[in-house]
Length: 163
Length: 189
Image (cartoon, rainbow over all chains, first blue to last red; front, side, top):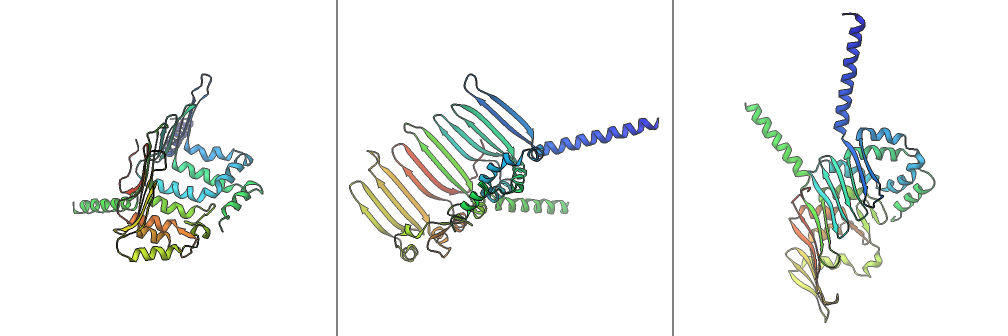
């Protein structure tokens, strides 16, 4: 066999192996699913499935200023969310919250290593599911944000209010 | 063969230890409104999870698993002394209020503080409130040592250590509320 063909074959095997390993890693990490179906005649229908493994990469491209406001709101809750995510993984599947009234149906469940949120209201049907682990990467992105002198400080002020 | 059996036994032990550490006791909240606005609410929280999350929340009056309620709320009543007196006494009814529209009973019964309220002021529908809190939970709640502070984490821990118990039931013509603790993990439907 010519040497060139052998190198090409080896490279092909390596690439295929890499794809299989990457695919396995993506499969293992699960997927983030977001579906929004507005019920009005001209309503929007958004269906998004993204591999959870891509969340940390995707978050790197979100500009700091776009995350800063959300970060200031979420920052006081970060330690609690981190513990919740870690601890929830240990539990069997269960329904955390279920609310049904004449117009709205809300269900928050833990299924496998995924949190599933379903909302069926008069306006829209929303389905969000995400692997618990993917929350951690979002948290780390928020933690890494520099605290600005605006909202973040306000949230710190609130967090110390009871002292 | 012996090694396989030993391995299996160890695996079962390890699994049961992990399961025993989690999903042991659950706080359930159930609200059913069958009136004009039909409403159904179910909340299921593993007490173990609550015990771990509460100390991590530092917001407003909640810090490190303890909540400040402000001394003014006690209206100069020494809550600890009052509860100590009730705990050390025999089972009895301590407060009885009977009026045209409301009956209130506060009692100690079988290690629990019992509060029963029958209220007829909500239109013609009688509203019944039954609260039963184990004294171990009340002790834990007041264990921080500060007069204006309740130790929620200690209370959750005490609740988890306690057997299955119904804490609160509220019923009127159309509303039913029930808050209880048991070992039944709710299945995801």
